[in-house]
Length: 161
Image (cartoon, rainbow, N blue to C red; front, top):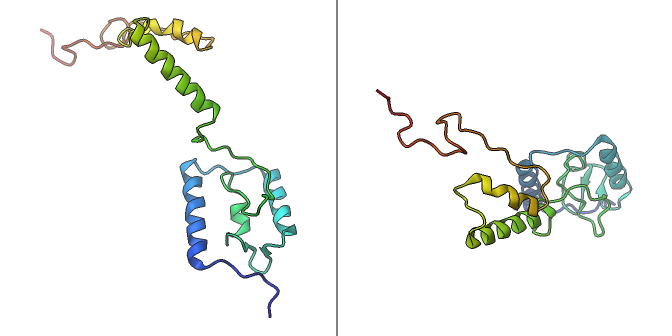
């Protein structure tokens, strides 16, 4: 009898690979640094779940040399043998999401109170200061029509006589 651990079914391996590949591609195919890649390979090499003959993880079935490169993947072992390096930007608790929700609330409240007019771009700067932004948005005459802000002339595109 072989000492190698049993691999997951081909269906499970395909499902795991498709999930990891989808996330990897959606996030722009980010790879870890060479240092982190080597640390991951070392952790896998010491792991009892590694099928050394095929260099595959027996928990997920992935080829270690590829999975270890992808920043969006994690070690399937519990606890993970890899240090976390990827933060999913879709996480509701992320700072980006929190600030966007805060900005939307402030803008909605300001519009309801008449403090901010979405049709008048210049009124946004006091709100940006309130939200903690240090720089102001500069508004200049529209290059296309000569009006303030980004309003377009009604008859733009028509030939003038």
